[in-house]
Image (cartoon, rainbow, N blue to C red; front, side, top):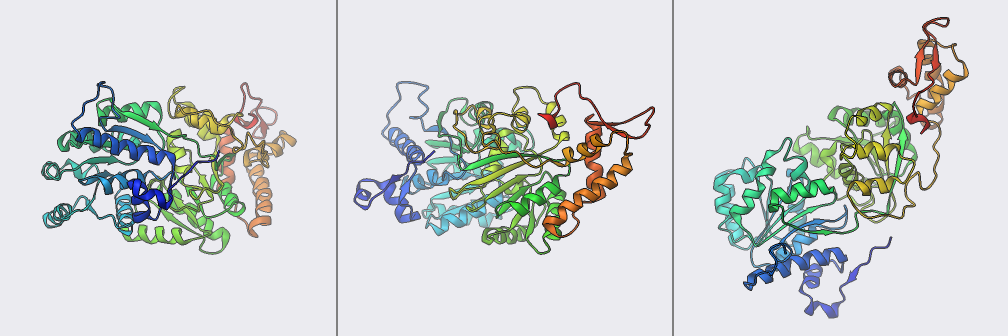
Length: 507
């Protein structure tokens, strides 16, 4: 679907302060319609309140300057609060979830001649006072995270800074993190009340109706104007690969799919292991890892390496997800499924930010199927199993999870009718089925080890499969009752189990 752009020709600049500010400060010659709508909502609500007007409806949250904005990843939501910040007669405070995001955004704002200050934990009183001095001298943006805003003294000082607009970026974290491990998010409502700005805007790329409701409850006491663009990113194509030995499947994707590439891993150790396997398989330094356990200098070095790379592979936890602005990522691989459809869309959305086609691969195992089966039907988590195992449109499953629009899809493996070569499960089942009651477990392990490495050598010129990989394949097949050891005449020998219900491998 083509995205319309509103051009800002030079003759219109004098009559359009928004277009003029976009060109002069950011070099932007056009804005997307949704950007214009959000910016207009902010500025018009401010003019409305500044004029002392009152809405005829208590529920008219647009005129009250309270809105939640859903824009897809890469749609340029930062511009939606940076442009108003230039035009409002007081500073804008932007609340970010991660310190790395704050640092990166400050650098970008300074490049665009947008003066900003950062409040973070561990600052001395002298540093804080220097920040307040810069605000009084005209700094337009105040950057902060939820934790630092729990300081009562800081909030009291900020409330005297004539803040006109509070913007909460990645607002889905208010629900997802506030109710779990970052309770400071639940305090943001009280922060907003204390500062009492005319305007409040919450931004996110992905949020289900349940998350939206919780965000509105915490930030706006349940009353907010929702601005939703189309949630779909047609240039991202979705694929699911079934595999037990997930790192090996990721190696094949790294070799066959376009790079730069991100491989999202479920833990710090897995991101490091995946990166090492890539470098060993490729024979040179093609990959690095990134997670929250790295020192600041290590993170910055890795970020710069990946940003400049044209064929690198970054193995990362979700710590690298939000705020990434590398535009030429062509492939995003998930070694483990994200916890919810929103999180998956957010992370898959790191690809194709330049508008080019990007592929998003989820590697899905029998163990994943069991794990996600435990979630209640209709829950946010349950949609990942539906997405992975549906024979219908995968894109529509993700959009349904958000309560979003119907989509025309020619960008998922089901709609494109793509059939992949047999996965490691199916190759193993094939040999056991052909020689029923012939192989013992250790014998089939040796056979599959030989066969899989023969295939791997065609691509990598070396053995990449380990006995541990083969053991994992067989263990999952046994655990999920796809195969079993005979107990009687052919004791200890393997046979394919006749399933009583539809199997993931035959779905």
